[in-house]
Length: 74
Image (cartoon, rainbow, N blue to C red; front, side, top):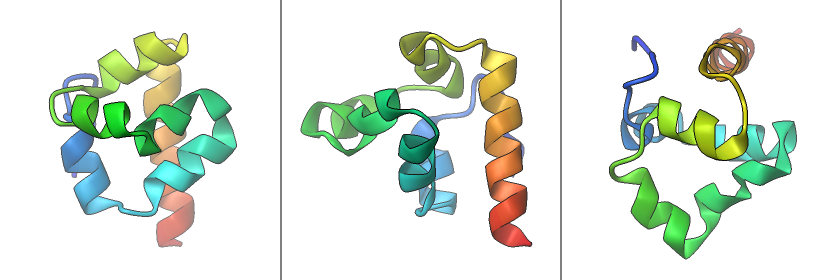
């Protein structure tokens, strides 16, 4: 799966269902993913939206996602 700033979070989480816990461990601000409002927002949110909300540069979030996925697949 190609992941960029326009990739929908719902698509990433469908492909990698273990990812929310890994993101929460990375930064507690990602706990919103498991909240009721987070579940609503995930339907339309992109990686770029999540990065902005968490206060990270998009490139950093993309790099971390790639690292987490590569580590999990190894």
